[in-house]
Length: 72
Image (cartoon, rainbow, N blue to C red; front, side, top):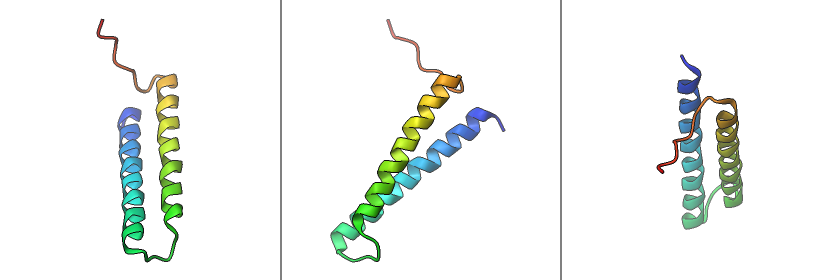
């Protein structure tokens, strides 16, 4: 497998995990029940969002992914 494909799979899995944590926090907020506080899931979401941004910056810096050229 190429590095680009592995990077994309990891990025998609992280984004799905972020959405899962956001949904769990919403469920706890609406129902008012749960063994863990809502802030735990929101904190995880923020942590993994920062991780996604850092991965993108590192991949751009190392040349794994390239940005689109300017349209003008």
